[in-house]
Amino acid sequence: MEGQRRTETAILAGGCFWCLEAVFVELDGVSSVKSGYIGGNRPNPTYEQVCTGATGHAEAVKIEYDPEVITYDDLLDVFFSIHDPTTLNRQGHDVGTQYRSAIFPLDEDQERRARAAIDRVQNLGVFDAPLVTQIETANDFYPAEGYHDDYFARNPNQPYCMAVIAPKVAKFRKQHLERLRRPQSLA
Image (tube, rainbow, N blue to C red; front, side, top):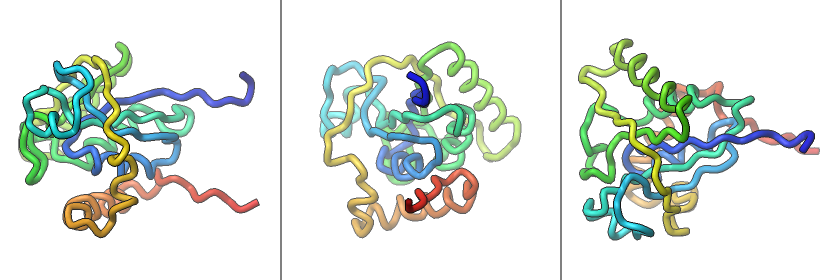
């Protein structure tokens, strides 16, 4: 259809999906962010099942974006700036394979770009330790339960949100000011 923008999809895991969603939803060019589970072996897992670490799934976000406004490489740059890709199966106090750092490419181009991003970040020496981010096959993505949607926006005073997510969002805003979603002008 003429006038309709093309959208692409990215799936990333970097610890708690509430943290990832709170950041990616603020990016200009991102039309939606959905928390969910990927990379495991149990069909239709629940949050409680994934939290045990027994399903093999990672908490992840599925990002729909306009590649004319923000590129896959831009998303990866933000991804590497908002979590610690050097800690295996851990982000802060969240420990387990469900909190691993992983990229789930949806095609060969995304896989090539993901590998290049890992190499670029590693070679820049941004982190004192080697990156442990894995590139994994994008199998079925299972959307998380509805109460996870917009979790930070709906629960800003919840202790986890105040202690973990708010500082991460503040750091992201400071580092990526030019990439923030522009307020819609009033007509």
